[in-house]
Length: 299
Ligand code: ADP
Image 1 (spheres, helix red, strand yellow):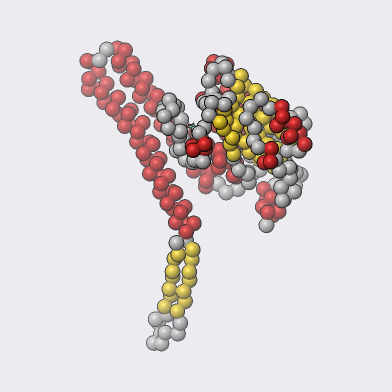
Image 2 (tube, rainbow, N blue to C red):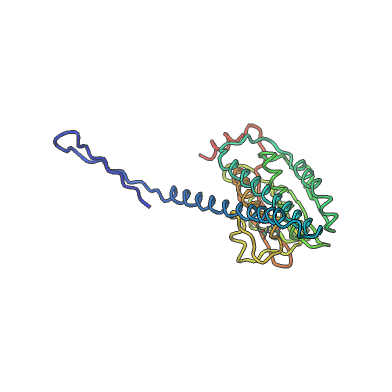
């Protein structure tokens, strides 16, 4: 789209000239459209649990005496679940908008073993209850990456949470981190699950940074090729799955956003019935290479 601005100097008797600016506002218009689409999606998503909560409370209030104790309890439990869903939604929306409004984060050296350990600690009980094996494969002597601890923790939490949600009893979920060098080729041969394609191993980028690859792999239900292209979009959820109450459809867009803040991209390989692996690369921390330094090198 083009915005035409014409400035006519009519203050004097004779018009001396016309100034005209031509501005391409395609990107701006796209962003505005995306924003209003987001707001309308959020409103719709918030309205559904609110409507449910109100209906259950109203019914209990008006007809509570006609209902059995079990029925009353069931209504209250449903209202409670819907309240939890509302809380998750509001938290996710806030996380996403916080992420979008912050431009510069304080990046530092992050020893990935720590957020990985913390994530696995969070989910260990849940995995045991579901009968899923949680595997941690961190290459020994892995160098620290340039990143933001809390944001990376959120990425691991969202990805491992999803992996556990969509994996059946007896399955496996692995969190791996390794340096992209010759070891990456060995890793490809050793790994028991789906792996990123080997040609995607770029050891050093144009700015001279080496990379650590992170994979969150599961042996779960997988994602159809047709759904993979939209999987990182806000509110996208694969249809016909029995997870109506648990998710918000925002987890992966938060993941994508955080990884992009780290100047990287989120990818996945998936095969229905075999499993899914989400993967991304992070820059190895170099002394003196802060976010400013990265921006300077990128110029
Ligand atoms: P949600 O809150 O619904 O989990 P996400 O953005 O995290 O939202 O995920 C979007 C959808 O992608 C999920 O609803 C699910 O259908 C699919 N998905 C995400 N991770 C996996 C996975 N590891 N295996 C299979 N499907 C997945």
